[in-house]
Structure formats: C-alpha cells, structure tokens
Image 1: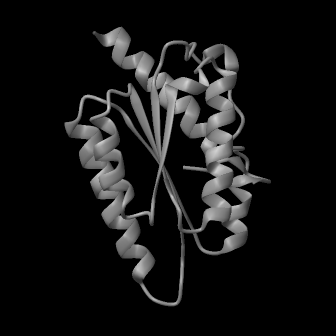
Image 2: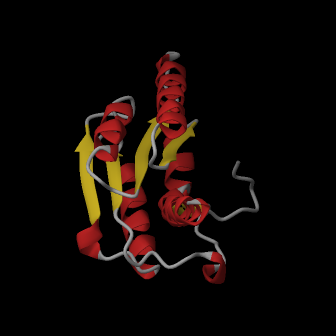
Image 3: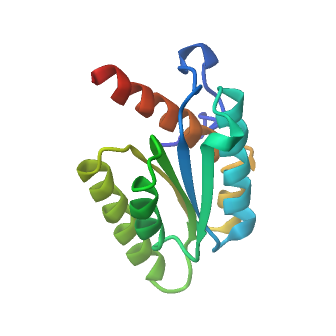
Length: 162
C-alpha cells in the first residue's frame, strides 16, 4: 500500500534482477487514457532500463479496467513470462467504481493464483483525478515503474523456484 512517504518510482536497482531474455505482456485499459498512457510509459521505460528488449514486450489495449481480466487471461496464453495489467478507476457519483475495482481485483487475483505466469496488478483506484495524476508520474511517482520492477522480480522468482 502506498503511503505519503513512498514514491512509486523509487527502487534499488541493485535488487532488481536483469530482465534480459524476459518476455513481458502489458494489457492497458483505454479508459482514463491520460493516466493509463502515463502508467504504460513508466512501465515500458523501467522494463527497458532493466534489460527487457523492446521486441520482447507486447502491449495490447482493452476498453476498460474490467476487461483487463480477459485481456490478461489471453495474454498469458501467448507465451509471455509475465503480464502487467494497467488500469485506472476514479471514484464517481455512483458506487460503480467499487464494483469495477472489486471485480477486477478478484479476476486478476484468480488469474495470478491459477495460471503459471505472474499477473501484476497495475490498477490504480483513486478518489479523484489529482490522485491518479500523482500516481502516474506526479508527486507519488509512477505505478507503472513499480509494476515493471515487480514483473521482473516475479519472473525471476519463478525461474529460481524451478
């Protein structure tokens, strides 16, 4: 959980395994594209910075955050070593956001538990647009950076555990 003092882009590069030879799939929601595009840019930059080659990264879009479940489930089948699911849900005037967040979280969790490929949760859920901007390259850093580091570490984990 992010705290006021934690910058999502801060990580110790010496604790990140090399991403060389890793194939990463990224599924990105088109909804709130100004935010998800920034999260995607952060993830791509961090993956490349840590050795993942551009040709080993496959990016696909889906209409909204709920569709990340299907997108990630299909991406797992393509032979990637790990998947990052990127979305943004901002609280509205109705409880719609809660249902989307709960369903997406449950679906991605189920994929993570039942598939042989790590699925990284890159859904940010905020009360307003400012909070989303803060987590998409603003004062809180970029959740995309954090997701990229996590997918590299989880792929490495899977490789080491055998």
